Image (cartoon, rainbow, N blue to C red):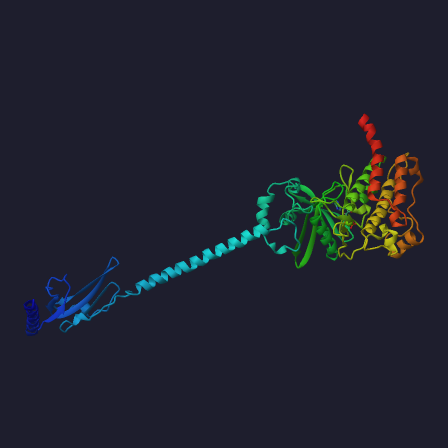
Length: 497
Ligand code: ADP
Ligand code: MG
């Protein structure tokens, strides 16, 4: 063993001395070199280390050179590098680094970071947005809300999915409505409103215009409120959307919409369209027979009674008083029944919660139709019954307008508004007060009415609607019952026939 080691040392010294004598160097070499001796040394003019990148792998070589090559002096390249030195075993400590070598791991890490970080951020954002949308869809109230203009353009989604080729009847079907209020879900209301084409202006009221509009080929009425009557729009929208008001004799509500155009607010109320227009319009040029007169009168009281009564239960409604009942706010349908319109001034009352909701509309009713207690300002504003009684007063006046246009024995009067012969065209509050409260005058009932049993019964009802003392007046229920009895005399012959 010792002998072997001594032999090795001897050989090394021998090689070194041989190289020294021949001008050659002893270098470290790898076994791949053909001149590499058993003890990993070789002899040459120069020692070298080299690195060569091939197919992503780095091949590391060390050994001797017989002569100096160009590459010995060349710079280190991306795929090949070489260093040479000229002392014994000098390549032992010679190192080489190719371009990009060692940074490879770093750049891969960078690359991964560059891909993974944005990818992770996107996934996280998508999950968050998804969660928010899901939450919104869960909590989206099916009930109308106000001032939701900021809901943006989600209605375009609804346009295609909810409305499609629906007719108004499809949309208003109970399954489709909100379940609370008489309206469609809020976004559908907006969508319907924005798909309407205005065709012609059919009326100008005190506070706005009414247009015939077309939605999917069907006529609708569009009431465009002037900005000074925005409280009426708010009130009417509020009532239609919180109270279930579907009744043959209440104007059918379709939608309400608020848009902002050129910094001004446009308020629309969309309802069923009735081509005969208001009762006021209708009576101008239509004479009635007794049956039609009764039909109109009965339908109005049915509508008014529906407003006045509180209905309990899930499909219930509070009691409502109209406060602006008049022939202009009653529409005539094709079947000669009427429906009551314009709830902009209405008040609501719930007995169970004893809550009286007067709203905050600064508008007052129409002076010509004001009851004495309104004119002399004695009305008890804290008592809901008071408002119902003023409606009954106005109903009596409407009945009077209808009765005058009913032919009895070939005689009929021209259309005239109540108190036409006692006050000027646009009477002041004081003028009305003088006639109604001070002089206690009432519209003149034409004598000819007493020659007809039905019309004389109507004359009696009118008078009982006009008592100075509000509690003495008839109630809507009482009037409805009386008119029903009168109508049955018309129904009977038909049943026999
Ligand atoms: P006012 O302020 O005098 O009560 P409105 O603004 O309520 O008047 O209505 C003006 C007119 O428009 C009515 O007198 C009637 O001729 C017409 N009108 C209102 N609503 C409808 C409707 N739903 N269908 C057809 N015509 C209507
Ligand atoms: Mg009106």
